Image (cartoon, rainbow, N blue to C red; front, side, top):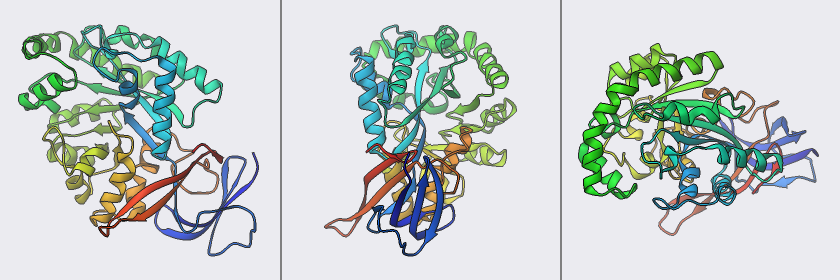
Length: 384
């Protein structure tokens, strides 16, 4: 890898924004200098912002490409390449592909085996076909009878970086509001009204039989294999206390202010959705991410189901005077990287990976500004 200079850049550092230049050598950041540079060669960013590559720890985007419509499965490699291109275009250089295990419906992705998908990720990585660095986040649906069986292909997988514990039983957590659950499952999942009613009636039985033993299995797996653990959709203080006792590092998408406060008090990092920030609230009627940010309770942003929402959410937090730019950027770079145990990336600092994003702030006719990704580099190599 050749040495490269990025000059005339507004570098977003951990505590400040500095106009200057960044030097890359061997895929790592060699040095940062403020002010003008004497280097004649290099990449002139023309005053654009230079951010660390974004780190995404929870996105359903790959699943969306694998099944773009209910029961319509797409070939693994084209789906992965399309997902990867969309991720990179959003400025994401490290992604934990969230793949769900546990579903009674065998026609769904989360009710079938992931072996071929995992083989495809490995093959595309080995052949250098991917723009982003791909890792795995396995979402385990605790009440599903087949969750442990479907987890088998991930057991000991070197890309496995995070496991989250889910329980989508209607009437609790994310789906405390049954009508919100009805809208989701009949809309996105394509369930009939009759199927929804049958599933709701059966859900409590499955939860009583499987949720507790499955939870114990995955908590033990994370402890013995050194895998980061996250709770999901915590609603009550008791939910957070249980997750903390089990060794969880993160509370994903707490649905109430009380749960987010409890997580903060116990040292769990709170993860909220970028779409929640951009839309001005939760699509499920839960607590707003911006409200948590105002209270100092937002640690990590996830793009969830819209990859481009990461950068948009960062800029929304800044433009609404909720967070300063360096702190907002940390929610999509340093904080998620640290939470996933990836200490070699997530900030513009000497010695770290040269995962970089050039962002141009475009002036709009209405006086607003739009962040536009103009270039992405992974370990100093341009991928977009």
